[in-house]
Length: 235
Image (cartoon, rainbow, N blue to C red):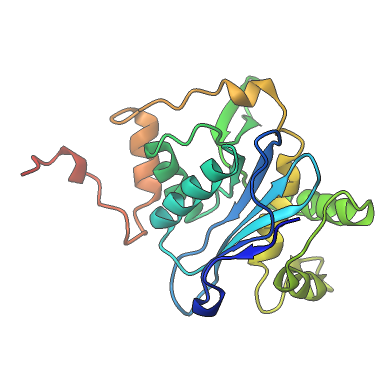
């Protein structure tokens, strides 16, 4: 196994433990933070679907839309890994930027409306009270079954402090970004060989209702231009 850390002395956000194998498939989970220096971290975990190894990590403070560029490069480096990006809050900005970059293997989930049973496909992994226990239990089971191999001591540190408190809430202390991205990556293992994921078409939907709806949901993000900006005449 090749172990390589990029610019370790400079505290690079990228760590690589195994280079991509052209015959293997990879998947990646991404936890998106606001990007403030004093806030939570954005984190990405890359898993080798053939061996279960955690082969690479991205961890640092970065604006959500810039994080998309890092995910795009890392995912393409690992044979265009299936990317499950968290769709909560600032994750919507990252997903929108990934679509602008036309990242070809971006996970979509099926959802069902309350008034009809027809499934709808939505971009990214959404973490809520139903899916969070599911993905944490999946990570726990994968570790118990030795289905994944973790080399990162920082991830181990966060795993040791990740608990279910007396109110039944799941969280780490002080951060759990590495745990969440790894848990999403484990969920992506279920879909990494799916032919349906392979044929998802990344379409440019600028100007459509869905595009304006995404822009409206990003109104509180200072990195995103206000509605109407895209209709202005550019110099």
